Image 1 (cartoon, protein in one colour):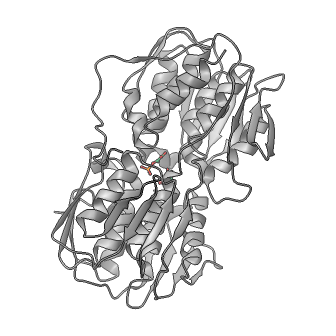
Image 2 (image 1 turned 90 degrees about the vertical axis):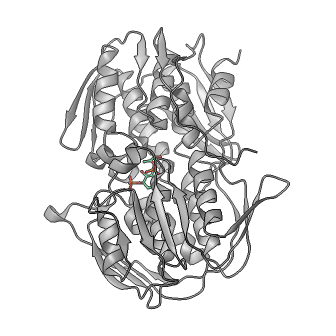
Length: 437
Ligand SMILES: O=C(O)C1=C[C@@H](OP(=O)(O)O)[C@@H](O)[C@H](O)C1
Ligand SMILES: C=C(OP(=O)(O)O)C(=O)O
């Protein structure tokens, strides 16, 4: 198993996306959830004893998190069956952390780095330096942390670890990313006074991706931490120990999106095994969203099966809670019979790339009719033609391109290797699924 971060470099040749010769019918087992794996790694590092993570995701984002924790002195050891055993330690500095392009590393690690006994310097890919960070840096300063960022309010910066943090109450504008809140909550129990996080933004802009905060709260409670989220936009974490984890990581439901959509655009049917009946993963919303697009959706002992209905219809939806599904849903909408309106996702401009601009550019390059709105996209289906689909170092843009390639002749995806951010096996699993007789 590879432990070094996978290279984000751009290969010279775009990947010729396979065109479906027949309806795609098959079953796929997804690797573990990125969001669960990186929360579990961080919590395990701060826990009161060793933890076991079974079926963790091993991808660029999670290997970066594992390496970051190792740099701080935590043991992240490979077990024989693919599990990780995490042995906490007093966090040490000086240390250097490569965040790559992982939001979960750049937002979850700094609130833990204040607990280190020396400086921790964080940096990442060039695009990572443009992703929103300033509000989290300010919030940590408000809680007593010292952070040297040369006024950039972005990566790279150095957290002056002092072996602890007073903690207390802080108000943050988390309208750019739910990860600011999740990051603070994950470490909050280890602050002397615990933590109260309150979200407030100009114009009442809400926190996006609330299911991801629910995931954080659920995982903290499962580890014995007392969290009060009864008041909207306020989260209270009591100081106290974090119990060791013994966790089976759920399959990544957001990464299931292109596979489920593959059945829909080809008139076929795809089953994802092990789909949890209860989950906090945002990707679970696919059951409802794809049904609204005309799919026949069944959750049973086999997993989640999504079959094409008589028509693939457009979608009018607020994706604020599930923004990470937007690129694949936009590609699916471009292949639908009726127009779509995807709303509530202005914050996608700060994701791996500006996803709204990227989707408009790349879909229109192929003959599409997509316009950017204040907070999303309008998609008028048009017959598409072949061409190179740019991925902008964005795993979900690459997945969107692969999906288009099933239904449109001559699509090639630039830098498909970027899918390794969350699923290094993407092209292998995709090719196997779509080439089945
Ligand atoms: O906490 C998490 O695991 C995530 C939160 C969301 O971030 P934003 O709130 O920045 O959209 C989501 O888009 C991202 O893929 C994963
Ligand atoms: C927004 C995403 O990632 P990140 O965790 O880097 O924010 C994503 O995976 O769609």
